[in-house]
Image (cartoon, rainbow, N blue to C red; front, side, top):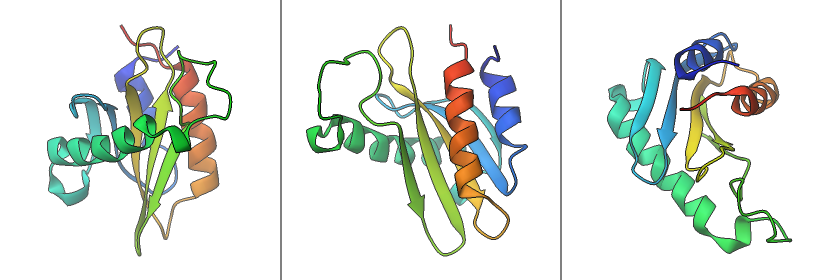
Length: 130
């Protein structure tokens, strides 16, 4: 079961990975970073990604139909695409408040979005926080 650093290094082995972070979406703080950040600053990229995550997680329309699961995040992942890259945010289920997500910045020309989404999901399940 990998910790934050091992998880982020594994994320960077995905084809087309440019940068990755583990972010707390309630505070916008990066708990760990690796690679190149979008815009050149890890802290700014983490804070901006946290705004997207918070928007999706706190909106009832994006949650599951049955509201019985209050432990896991209401959204699995978010994918934002632009002309040259993908930004994938994968929410991490935790034993506490589930307020963290893995953030992957993926080059569009070299990356495989489906593979990245599957692998981020696997990593999020195995990630050990604490």
